[in-house]
Length: 217
Image 1 (spheres, helix red, strand yellow):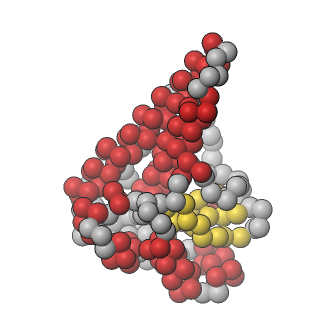
Image 2: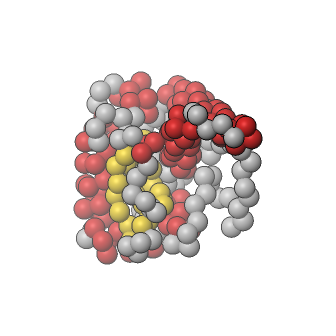
């Protein structure tokens, strides 16, 4: 994989890897369009603005507002990264790997004991994350294994060094239009969409210290 530096203020909203109606009936086209075209777009715009403000601060050697813009950088940058991986974590029903790949299932069973135990812990974490937040399966290179993490404020990041390989958005805007306050129903239905091919690909990347924001880069 070849990486290119993104110049300050030049982040772009990634295209969805499927049509707006491709995730129905689990996620409606209306919800997906609002979530991607409005919510994710706002993170990209906020990230670009924060980066350009910090460029300006360096040029002027005026860091009076550095605390504010660093906070904006973390909030919008994390939102952009997590949403990008969230889109690729899903695929249309009938057009995805139905079960984890060889590397993924090997690491899941070695650490969590079984696929069932992993699914139960991940689902429980997503259902119980306080307020709005995320649930992630990450590769932790410091431990040489997988881990499940929840993030309640993504601007505070998460376990240092971890690389997301499966991301579930548990913010209300990810499900409320379709499920209202029934987050548990959304979490349980979401497994029908998990793109295990992408999880396998991201795990192999992560084990080499790599992370991409799009599918099949």
